[in-house]
Image (tube, rainbow, N blue to C red; front, top):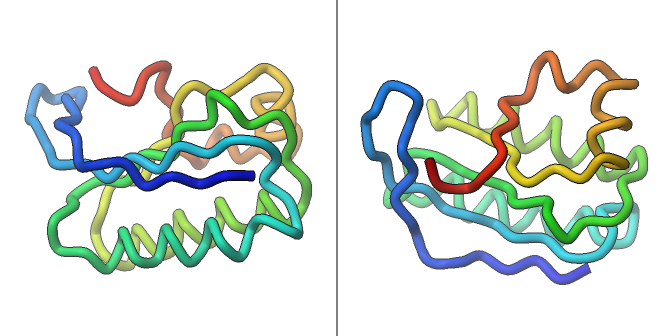
Length: 116
């Protein structure tokens, strides 16, 4: 998996308020092998005062195992502790199914696109 922290982009919140968001685009599988790198990159983004929101773009993620699920839960917890908004976007059907089975779709904010 390749995790890329892209430049901050403007995220239009449902309230219409523009926020600076760190967008982390993942590619491949989020699993036991790749979760630690994802967690490290997310921690860096959460600790940055430049970002009020974190968006994890899952468009190119083709697999998610229990370590990946735990990484997402840990990222949500970390973002909440820092009073930052945490979103998932462009979630594939296979990843969405895992989120639904674990009922994380009830907890995580999921949007179609990283902007808007």
